[in-house]
Image (cartoon, rainbow, N blue to C red; front, side, top):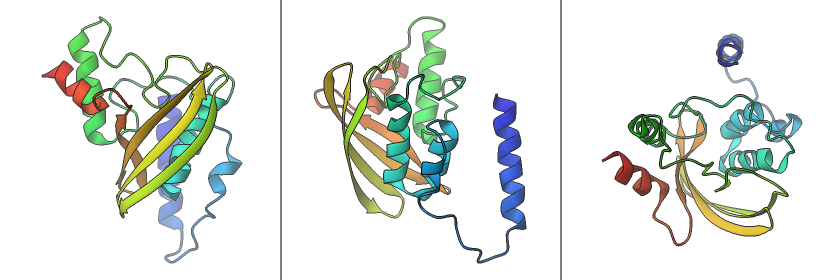
Length: 178
């Protein structure tokens, strides 16, 4: 699977290099054409923070998830470099035991059932920073959280997850790896 992603990335890079300068970008609704999953998330991450967040949660609302093979801890392109480094260090430090991050922070769950995204409110604080306040229902429970987002290169990524009543994910991971 990883090999296919690398090949696809190389093909896309080649196509981008062949595109004439000033060519019109793809329409903003292009990610909607892709089924929920990693390709749709990566495409939406290039469109804007709200499209990215909606694509992240669309996976959980889809039976079977659509994320494909799990990626190695600390290697997921939906997270920024710093968060990926912390996740990787958390798993390495756990040395085969249960790490601090033993769930999907996007849905604050291990499983999605009856998942419904209720609202996404994005506040952009600059060209490369935003926050998304998200409300969703999973397994009959309404949850609220805020995703801190940054733009690394052409793509939006998650840099932290804030859940009311808990320390930010980055603080939890830092405490575990320090």
